[in-house]
Image (cartoon, rainbow, N blue to C red; front, side):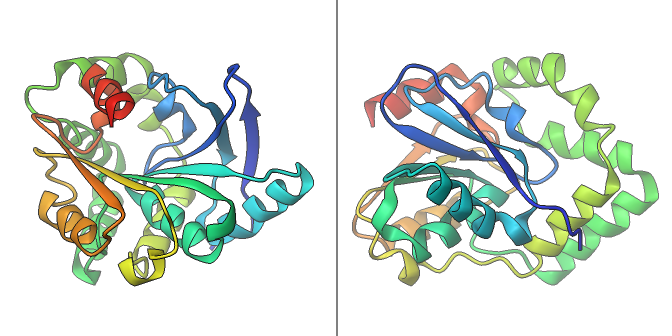
Length: 232
């Protein structure tokens, strides 16, 4: 486990509300740069999951922030739920995208084995599987702006993410004090099953479930996500 800490940067985009964007495994905050939602963005410039909540609470206290909404995608969904469950008083809205109830040990071990065999080839295949066959818009943007950089990322960060995911779970009972929750999920997601996200939503009466037709595990790089988000 790395001893490094998470670091945050506020991007003032001229809006009133702040949205913390928490990325998934094998990505970073740059995955969100084409999303353009009506918020100021709080970005984890460095994200180390085992220190995430502690460093976020420090940032909130140092900057005298009263309310933040959380946008957790994939692995970021686990982190968002963990932070929200322990700090409901200053969570404006909990937004979960492409979430999974939890991963089985054999799933995590399979990823570790494939990374050791050929990290670049495995990551390339993984990223392609994050998009549905019809989402050429999202995939084209990803290939142009991020794919090459992501294929060169350090092994240490990938291992840390897998270590975190090996024990991460979403417990709906711990989210009952969060007043506003939206759950977005691509109907063609092959990484995190749609049924799991729907089941989590069904256990949360205050949650709004938003299935996204024809989209996969990274739905927010397609323009239809923004349209659905703003109308939801």
